[in-house]
Image: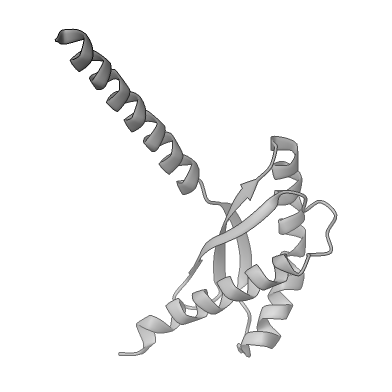
Length: 125
């Protein structure tokens, strides 16, 4: 019964460890964008972990940072294995989390609709 929750606990521990690793300054010079770890998704067998990150910066910095993150994944995997005391550490895959950008775009569209409705209401009187 406790088994299905284990991947969730491992995912949260990985999220914290990756965030700490990145905040301490990963040594790869390609990591130039501001990186925030938003979530981690771990497979049930704990062999793969997808780390969702948001990247702040211009497009060149973002592309460079994605390449830098991919290159530190193996180092990060060994660090996770030691710190989390897992029999075998999961393979780390980084993926850009676009949910913040989508939420911002939705907010902009809703604000635009509200403004247009207010203008129509003011003009119709």
